[in-house]
Image (cartoon, rainbow, N blue to C red; front, side, top):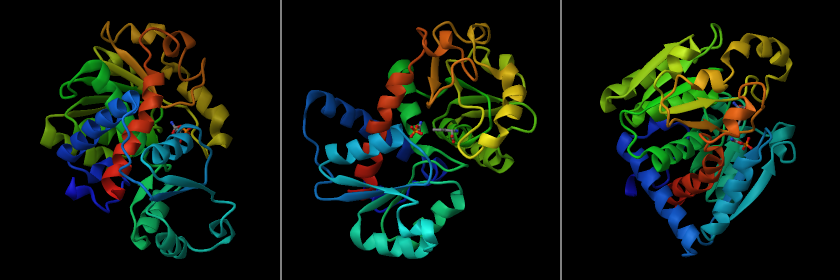
Length: 310
Ligand code: CP
Ligand code: NVA
């Protein structure tokens, strides 16, 4: 576990396949300890600060509860309530918080802001979602896939929809674990080319595969895992109407998932919009594992915090 001490979790690309396996193994161990009521106070006396510039249900609650279960505590810091919201610099905020806290989780817009915070902080910084990446979500997704499908290498994951933060982190997560990821997005809404190139490099090491498509049927065909996400992410509210039109052919519904393997599982990071990116019959149907997925945010993030803050 030594290689994790003091590290930031800004992107899954920064971690080796072996390190990602260590996180997932520990997440599974912490989950079973929690279920059995076995105490695991790996972060006794430690404090996590959680800076939020966007809304959250899962991230906020799972980090806060996770710290409590690890024997520490967490502080909710709404970015508008702290001086950051009145123009105190990210660098100064990082330097000051480093004198009080043992770790910082931040949810904001620009990935560059999270990187700047990490540069000036002496303590680990965890990315709780930016416009570009959502690594903690994808650790929970990988844990969930492993629970339901066993070993990850060779599995096919289809991501249908916007080439957004969730899609980007899935590209890294699948590439790092030897999975095949097929992304189907409308032209103009495809994942960032730089991220796709890095994910392709990651996949070379693991035998994974990265496929970027426009056709949802082609992506979903023979998939073990089908994933989608909201069409307009936080910060894109003004584009909602345009996006609703562009993405209509990309709805994950019963007709589309007929092309997946008969025992496929469906994932969605939530919050979901039934009748938009996903039909109720799919997200509320027998293949959906979204509640396990949401729960695993807790266990996966506890593993990350124990490793980097322990
Ligand atoms: N999936 C996810 O990050 O949810 P929240 O926005 O509720 O944190
Ligand atoms: N892509 C979504 C994920 C929400 C958890 C967003 O950024 O709003």
